[in-house]
Image (tube, rainbow, N blue to C red):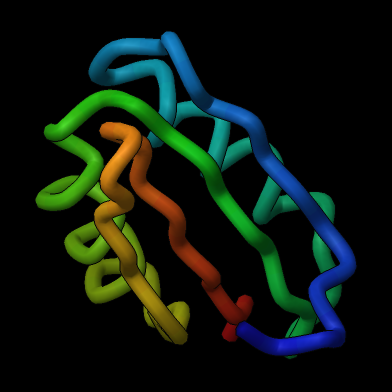
Length: 78
């Protein structure tokens, strides 16, 4: 996991489409190249967050499904 994460989004307990809507809102406030860590519990984020990054040109640095049922993502803004 990168050490220079400057933004965090806790989307745990939120269901589709809320995690991606919150992600979109947060990315708008970031500077190009900054990193955002996202925690989520909605399994649909496994599909939605990579597609969000691909569609908008952001880089998905990592995507991890954890044993506790949470999903963890690190995204770099384009």
